[in-house]
Image (cartoon, rainbow, N blue to C red; front, side, top):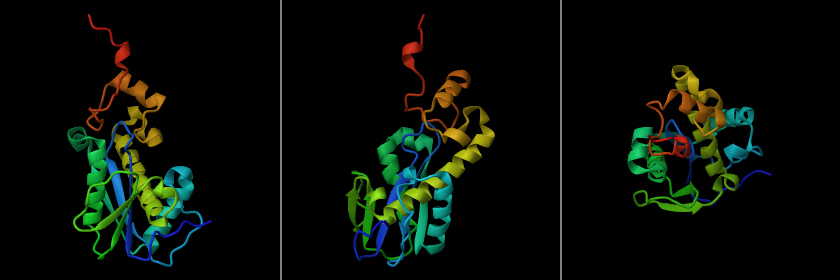
Length: 198
């Protein structure tokens, strides 16, 4: 069953990737799909395989009326917190959209007004509406590729596998090698209960 449109307006779907990661940027995407676009495989990026995400990313880019990316780095995440950084990344992506749209569809419960545009926050919107699902896929595939590129400079953290998320291997690497310039210092990166102060 294919996901649906929210309205008959020109709608921009927005979602982010990397919010729960310990390292790397948070990446948001803004996508406008044609009104007649359908694809039965379109879904929340977390619910489909990497192979399917990559296939869908290509299809979305080929068919979208517009798609843009917004990136907020770890330094800014530490400064303004991850929620504000996620919203900022969405605003950055939306700023790049050249088409005059009418409605913003936001995945999740939080957003900050964007200019004079109407927005709707939808919990689990990426598994209900195609524009948000498309943004979810574009954001995740873009960010995953960024983390693979960062892995080449910092292979000890295995970012090509964990994409910066708090896996056991990633947390062990932080304990062994310390943190990098790409880690979010405002996050709990090590288990403080295991540090002995003398």
